[in-house]
Length: 134
Image (cartoon, rainbow, N blue to C red; front, side, top):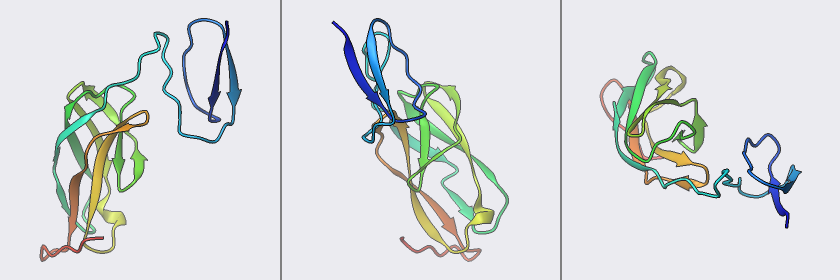
């Protein structure tokens, strides 16, 4: 018996056994592994640092939690960021305050496939420290 999966274009996946794959489907990205296991939901406990001054130089932000994998992505203000895997409890990315023009709070989460952690908040502050909620 063959198993059929529809996979978005560009999706990387691994199969073990006979399967039919349709590339270019338009729905939530699939979670497929050789053993049929789904990833764990990541837990985001903290982000360090959690603030930066608008216009400052780039800063390295470390996310601490659990359930991180080499495929985990840091989701910063709704978009996946280039993410470096450090361990199953730490991952990091670069935050660019130089690209921000006003004080704002943005959500940060970690994604394992379609599974997301709860949000933490990263604050871009004006030099005086005031922020506004987006």
